[in-house]
Image 1 (cartoon, rainbow, N blue to C red):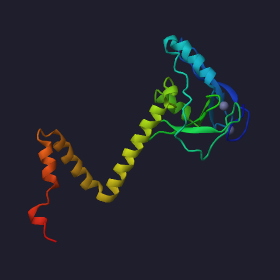
Image 2 (cartoon, rainbow, N blue to C red; image 1 turned 180 degrees about the horizontal axis):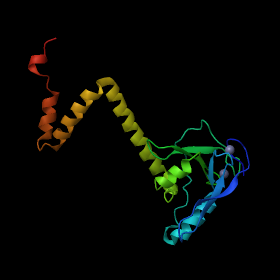
Image 3 (cartoon, protein in one colour; image 1 turned 90 degrees about the horizontal axis):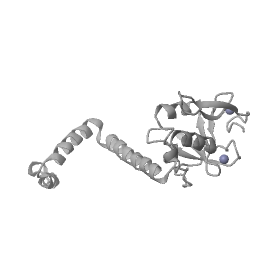
Image 4 (tube, rainbow, N blue to C red; image 1 turned 90 degrees about the vertical axis):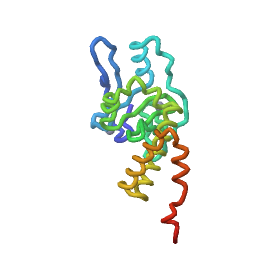
Length: 187
Ligand SMILES: [Zn+2]
Ligand SMILES: [Zn+2]
């Protein structure tokens, strides 16, 4: 197996070792470019931990991610697809052929810290990627409003909006908002 960034041979490594739980093994670039987790080692580890939850095979879903900076799978040389962990998170590269996952730099540690190791299968699902896409769309809309309206005015609007949505007669509040004020009507 070779590093997708420098093509050095990957070293065997222990990715997770905690108490009585079985170790999670993988491979790492000797120059610190990242970590590779083959899907068979991942599922062997998950089955060892949670025999009842062995059904979570990595779904063969199509990636939402783009292919720029595409990396080649250390295991079989296929192009890996990129997936976002969340709207503000990092990208993971996953091989659609063998299911192996590449973690750039310290992303493996970030994945462990975020408690996402158990949920790796879910990250690559259509549902997860759709949620990320929706969160990104909402974030872009907020950013656009802030840029066009200004942060202070947007904060005022949002405070009013929060109050209005709690109002028992909010449809009247919204109707009133649609009416042009008489004093400001002259052009
Ligand atoms: Zn490398
Ligand atoms: Zn592969």
